[in-house]
Image (cartoon, rainbow, N blue to C red; front, top):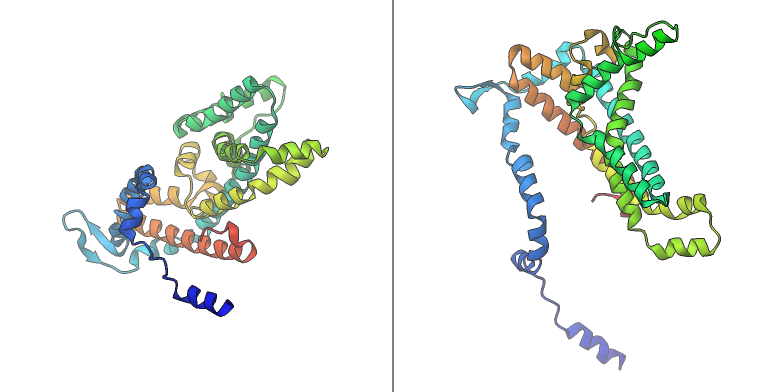
Length: 320
């Protein structure tokens, strides 16, 4: 009897795999919903790819991208010969690392606090107030920071003068700006970043939380044993995505706050601001393209390495 069943199983026809076009027809509704994102990434991520060739030529407006003279890696020598490659890369990496780690940590903390609020009115007001800084222009942020920290008429120095204390000169002290830049970034981005984590918390099975209450778990135990483990996949994936741009600095933030203050360049100059000054001086777009390619390659390598490590530790949390 068992032999007959095994033969029947072997003889059973295999299910025919669907082709690509059959899957497109089958899942046409889902594809239609993803169409705006597909168009966006195709237009801004894939269509500009041939422009990478600019990094390897001496770009000439008359001849165009593919008609310009090929110079190989000569454009990549710009940063190396400037003697600032290590400093610029270090500043960019350390700032972005602080932004990613502290930003996600604070966003998780804020999302948990919002979830624990019982007053819906106060929760909505708090979300709105924390979300507003994200919509403020970087130009206005720079103006606001200058109004607060200006040596002559700044709000902080006005208070210090009133209290009989000496004025503070932050725009002449490079050491304080790493902390100030991180604080400014967190103030502007935390409300926006917390939305994803708050949505993930809302997706947690309510029966699990109710069961923990029945078992006598307090608020801290609920956060430690239910909410944080449930947020772990979201945290890992968002950090992996953020690491892809760890070599790309926040140009708008740094340029509008630091500007052309060369005293602060030692601790605040990142790759984007340096390339911008160099490009605006001699209009060398090939150099800017070479630096962009350099950033992309470093970011790609970092994502691949971190994803490989995560896959070895927790395969379910890796990107691929």
